[in-house]
Image (cartoon, rainbow, N blue to C red):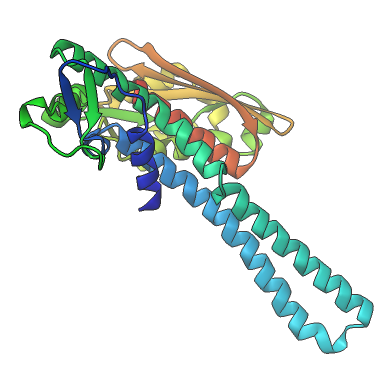
Length: 315
């Protein structure tokens, strides 16, 4: 629950339009934070990032536990120098663990920075909409009714619902009709190094996880996509092409499809991910990234790309 509260508090902290005199309106920032549909994707991305950090934390802790068990078992057979060396090794690993906890969860740590970066675009949008509605309704100042400072509010001056309706316009369309059907294809592996590392399929799965659960898209199951690709005689993602992806997207009844390419140079991955409209093959979104060939880096960048595309998608 703490990570959700961080999001709420950060959104509540954004600057709102105000004036010393004039007509005053109110919004409930906690209600907006809970009712702003696009924030669900941000919360999901934050949860995925937290799982990465927690997995690394648990891995370091498991190493410490293993070292301690081995030390206890070997202790009777060790010399004084060996005991000292083992104790230093365990102490070093404990310092690594404590430093990692501080780096991620400490004050001004990675969790705080990542949350701020993630929420900022939504907070800016909330601020813009509040300012827009306040101007239209003739308010010169807007206060947060969830604040303890506000003692009385007339219901006619509460613009919370109007703000949520504006923020959730796209979501209302999605809720009122069907979600857009989306297919995620493997990335084309642009060199033998990318192929050897299996990056085309790996990135496909991570992007699928990033898009799955969004209120905007109904994402086709990867097994269906895999079977469709195999039916075309494709056995290597080095041989994936835009035309193959386009034709299969239409066969699978997709409104949109995601396809791109990946290259591995040394320890650096170069990734381009595009989203196309199936009806006319028009590219509507593009995201690029360069990052280290490490599981945490790959996972976080794929999650970021999926989140960015979901947020930018307006059709």
